[in-house]
Image 1 (cartoon, rainbow, N blue to C red):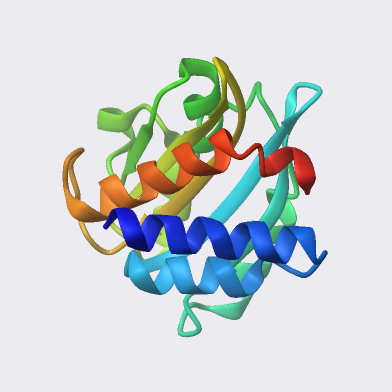
Image 2: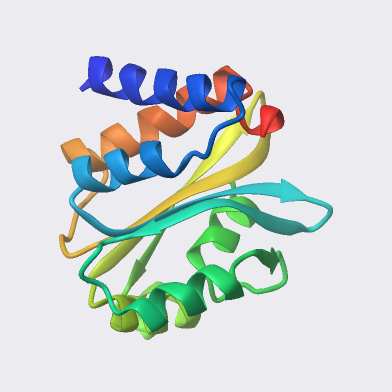
Length: 168
């Protein structure tokens, strides 16, 4: 798993350095995590700015387009989304289909539209500061410690250590 995380982070680093789209790397990570959708956001002036979003090819095209458009820039006041909660709490946020359990009404609604079961928003830290979020929605239900969870967490950790989000 460590090798796979390092390879994916090196791919991120390569596309960033060569000023190419991160879509291919997000597609690979989406496949590895068996996800329905994946996104990467950077914190900027009280907002999350989308750096990339990809979704399963079989997902409804309108749903993909709406989510991509609505999450181009997300206020950190939008606390119903896991990506925002991950930044504010400085810890992973798990969205579920049951908003009353997760406290993430917005994430629950998008999970339904994505035809997914759970979402994981992992903060990207540079030192002790959250600089972004890597989030995936999946058909699986995972817990901290599961290989997919650990892979995503390791990728976010290495991206922060290499300060990759500041390069985008």
